[in-house]
Amino acid sequence: MRITDTAAIVTGGASGLGNATARALAGAGAQVFGLDLPAAIEKAEPVAGITYLPADVTDAAEVQSAVDTAAGSGAPLRVAVNCAGVGWAGRIVGKTGPHDLELFRKVVDVNLVGTFNVIRLAATAIAKTEPGDHGQRGVIINTASIAAFDGQIGQVAYAASKGGVVGLTLSAARDLASFGIRVVTIAPGIIDTPMLAGVTEEFRASLAANVPFPKRLGQPTEYAKLALSIIDQDYLNGEVIRLDGALRMAPR
Figure 1 (cartoon, one colour):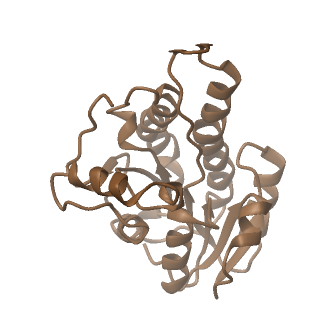
Figure 2 (cartoon, rainbow, N blue to C red; figure 1 turned 30 degrees about the vertical axis):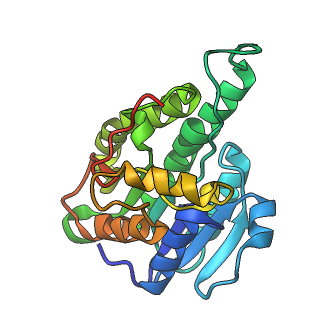
């Protein structure tokens, strides 16, 4: 599918995977709308071709407003990439008692419910565009994690939320097939994003050493390149792609 002269939505677009993807899409000629929380947008570097819109992915009204802005930009809305997410560690039974239920709900709400919220609203707008070759109207790309398959100790909330994203991928692709909208999910491994900014170089090296090949952390630009490749490959649909250097996470 052609990216040039189309509109694209990227959640979590102000930093990390989302910002790398927004930049790649803008570089390919798309009008990009980066959705993120106001605090993140304040820190984001202005980039030609990217318009930042404040939106909480769990808020239906805020996401709808952002989708309306993108769909009304003058270019057809063809792409939505879900990169917004959170992750907190916690065991089911910890030193201070049971896992905080509200924390579990929060992680699932942002990572899974937020992803679905964007899917349903973006797909509704994309479905109204003129179809291209073979009736294709657009692509939705979601972000899961290898934790969906190899959840570690203390990752129960995160693994459950990302497992849900994996689980909805094929069903969403089948739901939206009649509208010419493809759905694909990327499951990244250990990517060098701002979430790792506070760790020591020794810890960073230990993470990289566990990756079979190449023995390094992944880069946000590699996620972005894969996202653009998914958009380009019209026959790729309903699939979850691991981007992890063949890493399989140990229990801890």
